[in-house]
Image (cartoon, rainbow, N blue to C red; front, side, top):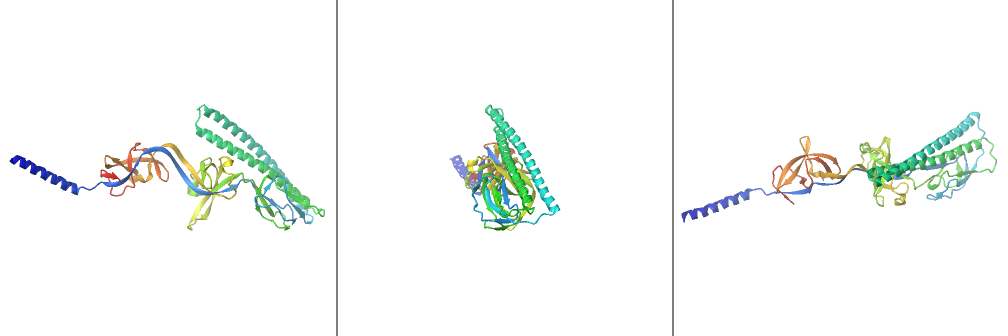
Length: 394
């Protein structure tokens, strides 16, 4: 009987000790966990840009004279060779030998510019033909699974860019031809032999629409005074004012997405990063150094027909991307000595693990070494979380 009573008392004492130990034991730390997974990851830079017509031309008065009221309005369509206004030139004084030679030199320069533009147009046409042929060839190879889809996409973008360059070169030829006619008209009417009542027809050099009116009412205009500006709104580019610290990471040919313009996101490609920056005051009054980045819209025109000149878009440059990147939330990483580490949840306890991160987006980070897919890490660990600390998921 004594041994039975002693056993019961011992068990009661052991239970009391266990209860006292549990009472002093710290409860597990409540933490947020995230799963290490493999998925698509993009590193991007977000900037704001504006659309602008690529090829635009300012129509000016070739000679001083009197112009009637211009009937065209902003947005009106104009055709190549269409007469905008009939200018009645004033009778000029006869040119001296020096001025006459200068006028002849301008005609010669305009002829040379027209010849150069024609040669560039031929070169652009040849390049566009070659780029289209290369795109068709790579399409056939892609159907046989001999090349990656990325190669086909790059070839398609190059063919589209070459076609756009060819169109711009044809526009340049028409503009040069118009400037030659303007120079010849100025030389003809500056000789002091203008017949009374003779009018100069001012025509548009290209097909397009009126973008801006400089002179609408009738009145006297000076030689070279702008009258109106024309261009083709279906030939748009995007001018993005990027911070200089971001511009150095952007390369020609880089993929860019145009968002928040009022429609679905549009694909684009960077064409040019201008080599000269400029200072701009931000909305907070901070001076910023910015660089103009020019990008072309690679999406089919029917997707962005409602866009016009000077429209705002958000440009997201794709600096790096992967379809299968091992990643964790960026908030799980923290500095440890000269490297990086995370806390891994292991059987109810936090375990310190050193890792090697790779590329980072705003919210996620690529993991090159130290973690495996499916493991769970603590996000936003505070100072109460340490190696071996008991944890519980919130």
